[in-house]
Amino acid sequence: MKTLPTLDDRAVVRLSRQGGFAAIQATTRPREIAFARCSIDQRTRICSLLEGCVPLASPVAGGGDQRFYQIELRYREGDQDDQMVMKVPEDQAPAELVRLWNLGELL
Amino acid sequence: MNDLRSFIPPYILHRIVAHGSERQRSSAMSTLAHVRTLWHPPGPPVRTASAAILPAPGKPGQAQRSVHDAQGKMLLPGMPVRLEGQAASGDPAVDEAYDALGASYDFFWKVLGRDSIDNKGFALIGSVHYGQDYENAFWNGSQMVFGDGDGEIFERFTRSLDVVAHELTHGVVESEAGLVYADQSGALNESLSDVFGVLTKQYLLQQTAEQADWLIGADLLTPRIKGIGLRSMAHPGTAYDDPLLGKDPQPDHMRKFVITQEDNGGVHINSGIPNRAFYLAAKGLGGFAWEKAGLIWYDALCDKRLGRETSFSAFAELTVEHARRRFTAREALAVQHGWSQVGVDSTQEEP
Image 1 (cartoon, rainbow over the protein chains, first blue to last red):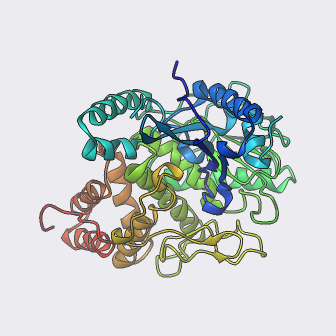
Image 2 (cartoon, rainbow over the protein chains, first blue to last red):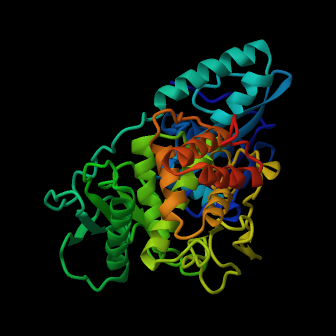
């Protein structure tokens, strides 16, 4: 089982809905969440949500015009910037992930 | 770099392999090997829509359709509404899907001699009214699915025949070549679906390459959107220019190839390049596009040498070779010219 990296207050989470026959950049509606602007409670809940997405993620999501949620994590690892990308197929995406992307809200 | 496994798109891994440190390269190569184990090999689709009502097995040349109604839910396949041979239901989405699946089957059978998705009469299942205001159509490995659109940007996705044929073609491409859905092979996968999607429409309308509009999804955008379709194969990058949607980002030449982390490496963006190459080849060959260019592209798709991670250039070489093999050097030259005009080197030797 893969795990999330440690996300401190320098971490940024970018969520977008990608792919589909009508793949148009404007409809991906990317949402960026800077941990620096989140409370500890919010960060904890987001990390818990992201951990739940790890086993759902697939590098081959999107085939045949199927949509997927792309989770991009930008964070510091030691003294350098690092990045992780997860792709969660739309039909497996947790409702809480969809809500966070769509409304910027946690349940 | 941390453990890369499962998280980094293949095209980024390829870049890391090319430019990263020794440790990064090693990790990226190991990850690529893992990712490759996840890719489905080429082969016929697997029937997983177990609840689908299938029509009785038919004979070659006869489509076997069943259209289901997902009733606004995201559960497949939904309730069966219209099986092969049954009368129109009165629901436009159901009847459009039924007719379009039939037209797509007919195109593949009559023009290319292919008996459905797997060339063995695979039953065609379509589900309509999927989700709420769902702005998409897709092939999920065993059936086709169509949303109703939101009515503000997109109309229902069954309105455009080429969209239905596009999704069916994804099944054909999976069966024949299993092109990996990322980067150039992914853009080629998308382009092939556009090619056979648009040819299905041109065949039904009996339009020559000169007469056709070469638009994908011409009936999908609502009147509120400033656009003529989702993609233009003739002039990629010109299908829409709208305050809400932005401008069509498709490139029409390799010098404008888009490197991006979005959309699996821009599979719906860079498909503009091979799309235009096909259009130019078809125009150069003249007449009905399915009679020469379509056959040539189909021969290349079915060529067992076509790699799953093929480049535009490798596919282009196959098309030139098949043009020469099926027709003459004149046709090979027209195909080569189409590719060269979009900046893709299509041949190791003169045709």
